[in-house]
Amino acid sequence: MGRGKFKAKPTGRRNFSTHEDMVAGTSTRPKTFRQKEPENEEEPTNEVSEEESEEESEDENTKAKGVQGVIEIQNPNLVKPKTIKARDIDIGKTSELSRREREEIEKQRAHERYMKLQEQGKTEQSRKDLDRLALIRQERAEAAKKREEEKAAKEQKKAEARK
Image (cartoon, rainbow, N blue to C red):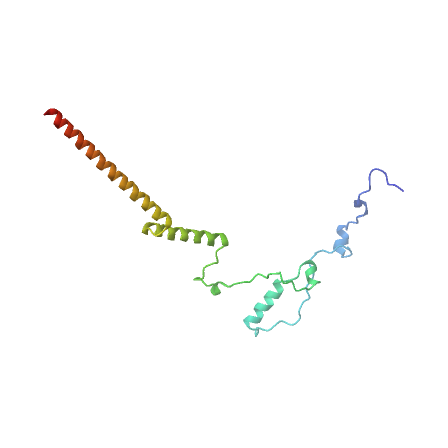
């Protein structure tokens, strides 16, 4: 049968523990949600080398979360973070540059090389510029010579007109 417009909420089915049940220990709800670790009756001796103690500490730190503990697979794409100690870091080693940074540096060096060749007059553009400058100097020299001749011709005419 239909239940009507409003459905009953699941809160009606909940059972809550009373304080007396919790104190008495008869409550079905656990006091803590942590898993209890089995207590080792034998204490490990201090004769364990440093390498073995490091391996044990790594095992404790890498507990499987969720389904990972149940399903053990070898994922080739899974990259485990490598822990590097401060004493093992090579200070002289430079970090690898990204593609963009490498291209930018390469571009700057190419520009510097080009400008150096430009100053020496070895590039195609510099040759064209020098040829153009030579033509301009030649034209200016010819124009200056022509002006001087015209000026000299005027002076001569004035001198003749005075006589």
